[in-house]
Length: 501
Ligand code: NAP
Ligand code: MG
Image 1 (cartoon, rainbow, N blue to C red):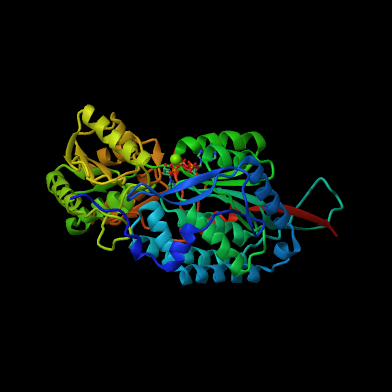
Image 2: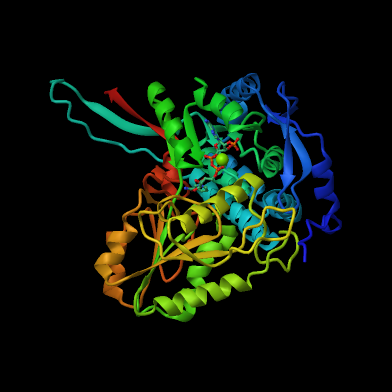
C-alpha cells in the first residue's frame, strides 16, 4: 500500500499560518526583505513545497553582520546586567514551551522527524539548554594573579584577568535536529554576552525564524539574534568570509568544516566545528542483551539514522553475533514508516530526495563490494524520501559503508574475537565523535572509556546528551565543543590587566 504524505488537517491554526507566511529574514529586530531570491521549503513525506524562505545574498549577510556588530556594544545589550541576560534566556525557554505545539509541528513537517521527538527533544531539550546556559551568564569570572615581573625592580602590581564576550558569532547549522542545533549555537553565545547571526540549513530554515521572533518577545534587544536563511554556498560562505564576524560556530559535515577551518585560519578567526561521525557500538559477550539489542537498533535507527552520533558500526562478540544481528533485524523489520506528524509512525522520511538517494547509493556500493543486505532493501511505495531500516553483514573496514558517514538508517554489523580487536577496530575510523560499550564488567568499562578515541563515550546506553555535558568530537569529528561550561568559555576572550600601584 502506498504511504500517504502528511495529513495537513492535523495541523493547528498557528502552524498553518506560519507555513503560509511570506517569510523574511530577521535582521536588527526587523522583518527584513532579502535582496536575493526565494527557496522552496519541502515536506519530505510527500516532496511537496510547504513554504518559501529568502535566499539571502552577500549584501543581506552584510546587513545582518552590521546589525549584530552594532548590537554588540549597544547600551541596550552591553548595558544589560548578567542577571538580566539570564532572565531573558529563561523567558525564551518558557516561550519555546508555550509555543511547543507549533514549533514541533513545523519542525516535523519540514524535517520529517517524528512529532513525539520534535516536542520532547527539539523543544523541551532546547528549553533545558537555554535554562542551563542562563545560569552561566552570572558565573563568568576572571582571576586575580599575583605577578612577579622581576625585570621591574620597584614594581608593585595588582593584576587580574577578565572574560569578555568574544564578539559577533556566526552560527551555521545542519538539518538533522534544526531547532536544537540553533539553540546550541545561540545559548552559550547569549550567556557570554555575544550577538549572533545564524544561518540554518537551507532544507530546514523555519523554526530558526520563529526562534528569532520569540527571542525579541523574550526581551533580547534588536540585533542580538539575527537569522539569515539561504544556501551554504551563498549566505553561508558570505558569513564565513565576513570580516565583521569574530567566531564561527559550525555544525555540519567534515568536508564543509575543513573549508571553514582553512578560511578562518587566514584571518585568525576563532571557530568550533562539530562535524561528522561513524560511531561504533561494541557488544561484549557479557552484555545484558535485553537492553543491548534494542539499544543497538535504536542507536542507528533513531532519527532515521540522521544523527551525528548514530551508532552506525556495530561490533559484536563472535559468540553472540548471530543472536544479536537477528534481534536487530527483527526490530528493523517491525519499524513502521510514515509521516512524522502521524503519531503511529515509528520512523519518518529522510530529510530530502538527495539524502535518500545518497543513502541508497551507499547500500548499493556496499552490496557491490561484497556485503550482504539482511533487511531493508525492499523499495518503499511512496512519494516521500523513505529508506527502510537496513542491516548489512559481511562487511569490513575496507568498504565505504564502514568507513564513511552515511547519515541514514543503515547499520553494518561485524563480529570480533576479543577486547583488543574490538577496541582497535572501533578506533580505526577517521572519525571520533561517539562510541558505546555494552558490558557488565566494570574493569572492562574503564579500559574502554580510557581507550576509545571519541569525544563522547557511553556505557550500556548510546547517545545521551545533556546541556551540562560538553559535546564534541576527536579527529575528523571536529574542534571544540557545544554545550557545557566549555562552550560558554569558548564564547569569551580573556584579557589580562596589570595595574601599577
Ligand atoms: P553540511 O552540508 O556540512 O551543511 C551544514 C551547514 O553548512 C548548512 O547550513 C549548509 O548550508 C552550510 N554550508 C554548506 N556549505 C557551506 C560553505 N561553503 N560555507 C558555509 N556554510 C556552508 O551538513 P548537513 O548535510 O547539513 O548535515 C549533515 C552533517 O552534519 C553530517 O556530517 C553530520 O554528522 C553533521 N552533524 C554533526 C553534528 C555534531 O554535533 N558533531 C551534529 C549534527 C550533524 P546548506 O543547507 O545550503 O547546505
Ligand atoms: Mg549538506
